[in-house]
Each structure stands twice: as structure tokens, then as C-alpha cells.
Amino acid sequence: MKITKHARILSLVLVLMMALSTAMVFAEEGAPADQTEQTVEELMLEGLDLPEGEVVVGEQAAEAVADEAMMDGEVTPPVDPQPQPQAVLTATATKKYANDASDNGYILNWTISDPSVIAYYQIFLNGVNVTPYVVSVNDVVQTAQPQFISAYANKCEILAPVGGANYYVVALGPAQPIYSNPVTTIVEAGDVLDEIRFENHGLVWYGRTKKKVKIYSTATGKKAVATLPKNTYVRAIGKYPKKVPKFKQPTKVQVETNDGLVGWLRYSDLKGGVKGHIDVKHDYSRSVKEAFVNYKGYSSTSKYLIWVSPRMQRAYVFEGSKGNWKLDRTYRVTTGRFSHPTSAYQTGIFKKKAKVFKVTEKGKRYYFKYASYFGSGVSFHTGTWWAASNKRRGSVVKSGKPGTFGCLRMYTDEAHWIYENVPMDSMTVVTKKA
Image (cartoon, rainbow, N blue to C red; front, side, top):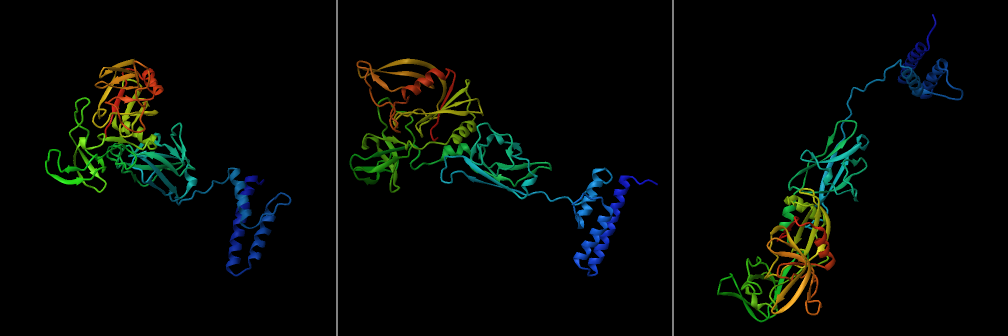
């Protein structure tokens, strides 16, 4: 009978298996290792038509024969009945800036015990893919938000749109998805901006006593709790006056001294009243600005939304739509002074615009340009000029010091941009604490 090639290969596999069994027996009986190898080698060389110059010994020969048989379709590769253990994925989250409460960014770090099983990662928030919230991956800012994160990544920056939310890192690959432990973020965008207290960052209202004055326990109290020396520095910690007649001052103001004494002073006892100041070098991060307006759910009937922050003396212009606002530009502004604040929490669409607006004050006329009005009559506009001489009436934008009667004074080019580009039906939001 003629023996086919496949039958010959199978017979060789059997011969090799017998040879390996013999070698194992020799080894168990104390045969030297080189004798075992020699026995197997002789058997293989007798049965294999190996290429000239190629020497295959030991178990390598059996593997070569088995591989040749599989390629010919004669042998089905064995299936490992034992499942491989699933890789372990561990994630943690830390604040991007540990000492900066104004930033709502987190660094999400993760490690996986077997990186070879991963094709890419995704970030989920309570079961919903939130990869678009990712700001950067491995410190590289994403210009186009990634749907998938590279298998080579091990960290990314995320926002925390909802406090106490559970984030999961999910590893995806050929096998079933691998979920990390839940990572809880505890800072909420709205709370961050509503509750933060800055030392040298946000707006600080302050004053100095112009003489030795008494400080009272209540706004209406007549009994003094202490006497402050002349030129004592105090911080105004009370609320804005609810309503002060134009060009007049509040009667009393709540203050705190450097040594922690809290009480009420007569507004007239302070040199120049209460002044405002911010450190202009500091501002909210881009991620916090966007997280805040989206978290608050602000909407506009145009593609523009403007958020005015008296606390930062800035106007933030966003482009997009409700829930998807992206910061377009940030402008410095001068807001209302303590006794005539820009109305906090006032929201309103643009009502009218005026290229030049003239004002008469105590018989003298001055004017400003590019006025964009909203709310109850406040507006964005330029600095002012005297009508008679066309000379500047005062500084355009004070260096971090509120000083208007409620309007928002801006640099000319920036007021002009809002006047020309932001439509009449755009929403402006003025906050108080943020």
C-alpha cells in the first residue's frame, strides 16, 4: 500500500512521542541528560528529511513535526481548557492643583497588570461615556476630543461636572471589557465657584480708618465693642448695599480687622469709603470657566454667552449652546464700586446698542463709545472723554479696581468687538460670589 505524505507525518509524530517517552524513562532511571538528548536526536534524524545543515534536537524536533502537520490540516491545535486570569485595572484621581480651589480639574491615573490585552481605553461616568470631558491625555491637550484613549496612555485630565460622581476607566480589547474600581470626585463646579475664599486671588473690598473710630456689634447697634486706631486696615465682609441712591454712600458696613475682630463701621469713617482690589495675575482656569457655565445650565438665543465676574474683574465670552459652551475670549473690565455695584445675579439679553453715548454730570458733558446694554440698563462700553475737549476723563480700565456706577468699562478695541460681533439677543450673566 502506498503511504501518503500526511500519513507519513502522523507516523513520524507517533515515533517522536515514543522517543520522548523513552527519553523520559531514561531520565527517570538516572540516564545522563546528554544520553537522553542523543537518543531522541538519533530517532528524529532517522525519520525526518531535514534541510541540509539544519540540526533539530530535543523537544524542538517534535514541535517542528507538529507544526508541519498542522499546516497540512492534519492536526487541530489543542485548546487550553484553563481560562487565563483577567487583567486587573486600578484607577485613582487627584486634584490637578492641590492648593487651588478654583480649578476643577482632576488627574485620573490608572495601571493595568497586563497591558498586552488592551487595544484602547475609555472613561465612563456612572456608566455613560464621558471621554469628551477629557481635557488632556498624558499632559497633551486634546484639540479634538478623543473618543478612544491610546492603550499606551496611563493618565488624563478630566473635569468634575457633578460632585460625588463615580468615574470608571474601561479597558477594551479582544477580550471582555475590564472595568477599574470606581473613582469618586468630590468637588462640584458650581460649589467651587460659589464657595471659594481667596486670600490674594479674588476681589477684596478694603478700607482704612481716617481717624480713631468705634466699631459696633450690629448695623443698628449704638454700643461700641472696640475702638480702632487711625489708619487701621479693615476688609469689608458684608453684602453689597441692596440699594444706594445715586452718588450717595451706605450708612454702615460690616468689616473684619487683621486680628479677626468683626463689627460694623460708619462708611464715612473710612478714607475714600470701601475700595476694591484683585490680583490681576490670577484668574480661573479655562476648564473651570467652561465647567461653571455648563453646570449652571445658562442658555442664550444666539451663539454667544457672556459671563461677567466682578470677583475677577473680567468678562468671559463663550461660543456654542446650552451645555456645550466653549470659552472664546477673556476681557478685563472695571465693574461697579462697592456703593454702586454691578447688579449681581442679574441676567438679561442685549437690549440696545449705541456707538456714542453722551452724559451730563453737574453741568459738564462727557461721552463714551460702543455701548452694549443689557439687563436693567447697564452696559459694556469704553472709557470716557470730555465732550468739550475730547480728552480722557479718567483711566480706561483701572488695574483690578472696581470704580464705575454699575456699568462695565472696557478697553476700546474690546468694547468695539462686543458691539460689532455679539448679537442683540445674546445673554449676559453677572454673578456675585464667582
